[in-house]
Image (cartoon, rainbow, N blue to C red):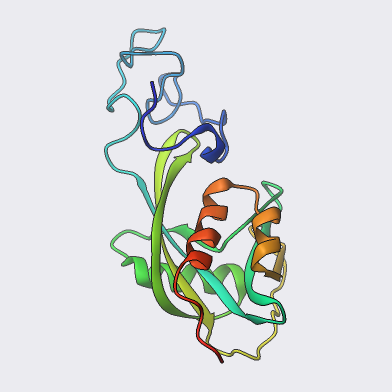
Length: 190
C-alpha cells in the first residue's frame, strides 16, 4: 500500500536512515509496520506513509541555447556520487523564489534569472517526504563560463545538452523536471 508520495524509482537515498534517540529510525518511519508501532513498542508520531509536513526545497533548471537545442546545468555531488539539478532546502521562513536563487548560486556559482514555473516534484528523501518547487532559469550573465571551485557538496558543474542530461541524471524526479521543461513552451531565442 503506497503513500502516493513517491514510487520506488523516485526514492533518493532509499534504505538510508538515522537512528533516533529511542533506537528507531529518526522521524518515525517504521519499515514493515502497518500501524506505526516499533518493535520496542514506541508508537510513530506521524501518519502512515509519511510526515505531515514535507521537507521544503527549491531549485532551478538553469538553461541556455545550445547548438542542438537547450543545454542545462548539472551538478555532481561527491558524497552521494550522483548527478542532479541545483536545488536545496529552504531556510526557515525563506520564500521558495529566494531559496531557488540562493541554492543555484551556491551550487553552481551562476546567478539565475528565474523564468516560468515548473511543476513541483514530490518524493521521499531518506524516508521523509520532500517537495521541491522548480523554475526554469537562465544565467544572469549569458556568456559567462562556469568557474566553480569544487567543494564537499558539489565537485563538478557542467552544461549538458538537455536530452543527454536525461540520461546522466541519477534520479527520476530530476528527469521529470527536464521533461517538464522540454514539454513546455519553446524557449525564446536569444
